[in-house]
Amino acid sequence: MQGIFESILLTKTFTTDLKVIKLVSTMKYTCLRGTKDILPEDMQYWHHIESISRNLFNYYNFEELRTPIFEMTELFERGIGDDTDIVEKEMYTFTDKGDRRITLRPEGTAPIVRAYLQNGLDKKSGQSKFYYCGPMFRYERPQAGRYRQFHQIGVESIGNEHPYADAEVIALGIHLFDEFGLTGLSVSINSVGCPVCRPVIEERLKQFIGSNLKKLCGDCQKRFDGRPLRLLDCKNKKCKTYLTGNSNIHDSHCHECADHFSSVIDYIEAMGIPFKIDPTLVRGLDYYTRTTFEIVSEHLGAQNAICGGGRYDYLVEQFGGKKTPAVGFAFGVERAVMVLKQHSDIIQKANPLIYLVPLGESNRPALFKLLNELRRNEFKCEIDYSGSDLNKCLKKANKMGASNVIILGDDEALSQTVIVKNMIKREQQLVSLDKVVDVLNDSK
Ligand code: AMP
Image (tube, rainbow, N blue to C red; front, side, top):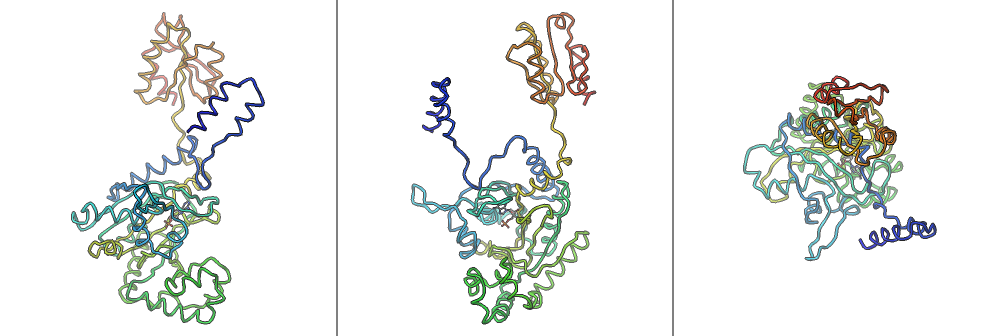
């Protein structure tokens, strides 16, 4: 804080001394690596995504639940899993002044389940459907589409074990991206089994790897004992070759998991959603059981997953509730914005600015009255405060991208009119003060 204050003082005191100004200009503050400012010019994309999401969540009967951005560290360690990448390497964890271990949330599911139990929402009805929007934090290596602070919008459908619930959230995900106007998306889907068949799947995988274990990457070797399923989604080319020929995960599913998966597929097929089955899609969070899915965009580079989710039938129980099945997804807003920006024609042009110029102090009150009326009629307006001459005001209006300038001088005041100057068509007309709203509406 003191630094900012000092730099302002120096700039003011030595504005004529070029050397000092140079020195001051090197005192720059920047946001931290992996974080970014979301500038006004990008807001239309964010608002587009947020407002469509809220609308659709309402149609699908999901309600908003907001949780704090920091939680007890243990919540994520237990929920996501101790030896996952997120918990091992990526969490922003610190000790607060009261010696508590605290973590900035890296994902939304564990906090939602915590809130669901803590607030007795599990007692209310058989099924609860929540959505959330907000920042998440992961200490990852930043690159295009991967940040350390990013935003997720997600849904959690808690209390419904029916395969319809899986299909419903997948349909909602696809519906959202359709409404955003995004194309080139595909759904990959898999089932990672349940506590009955998972050990069988894992054992078969371990046997298949056998003596090749030492040839796999360090991460795979580490995961081999505790989380062998994660070997399937290792991106290392060498590891992939050693896994080629491994039996399909679906061959080891128990009857219940096989039935569940085939019903999910039937439902999404019935809804006309194109998908592909990817037996290696296991995702990086430990809580998933049965269905896992991802929506991938062909318009993104290496970080092409835009949305990921799945079923987590044991997390509520693990957090102290009764056994409650659940399924959800989250998508990354930054990645959705990146795709949307490649199709900028989708976004409706923002309400253009109308700039009001009073010529002389005595004409200011009448224009203030009009300014008020225009804003109440949903026009975006600014009034000139500078008292500069008309030419300067017109230049300023142009720079601000104004579509119309409204001018009120002494002659107009006498006749209760204003000049409405259309900056795009470069034409102007004299309009009675009580007709300005109609004229602007007509020219929209
Ligand atoms: P996950 O919580 O890992 O299942 O991720 C769900 C979605 O969040 C991904 O498909 C991405 O769109 C987004 N996402 C995850 N991590 C990041 C990150 N570090 N930066 C930007 N977006 C992310």
